[in-house]
Length: 287
Image (cartoon, rainbow, N blue to C red; front, side, top):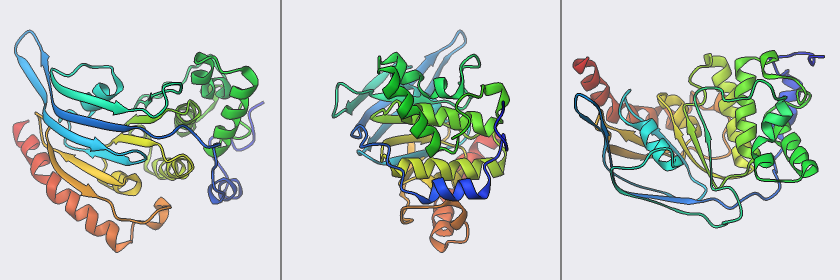
């Protein structure tokens, strides 16, 4: 039987799980990431395409870094290289993982990657099962993280019974339950409506506050980046280079619904757009 209120979380439930401190049991220590002179060139039948050029950056442990830039600037390519899914053409990528016995990286993609034949609980516990975590431990961990993202009561529901926003919550739960030292997120809310995006951004912030994992988060949305990030990298049009490195000085903990009218939010948005607009206009003129 599908739980009452499927596809929504009522105000009372939301107040309960967002008002408490989320303590997913002292989790894996956070990683550091170092990128030096990174260049990526894709070879095609017609020509070589330079996606990234001379990228240099360091992500410190526990930092929430957002990367924004015009379409085609290589944001996803950068994330794929950090994830180990692509090899750089030149340059170096290194990581400081404090624990070798714990997962190093998890990726949340733009597409909803839930397994349709698995229940919500089994989806959330998938990474733990792959690591050989005992059944009782992985079930308790998955249940805890599902509560953290507002899916308590939906453990035995299947993905086709969920809204798009709720399926993406399952993706978040699976990533946090697996307890990686570095979390990589590629526009995870891009395909959702604006209201659902705001709710999930807030959910993400509350869960992240309880873990302080190192996060690299790709987004097209300047507002989204400001809401969640400690720091924003603005990339140029292709080949992607780091054009600006902008700290987000809004205090934590944050709730996204309180930020829109904040003068500092408005100031940072203007600074990011000032760096980004030339690249967006250059892309438009090239089309």
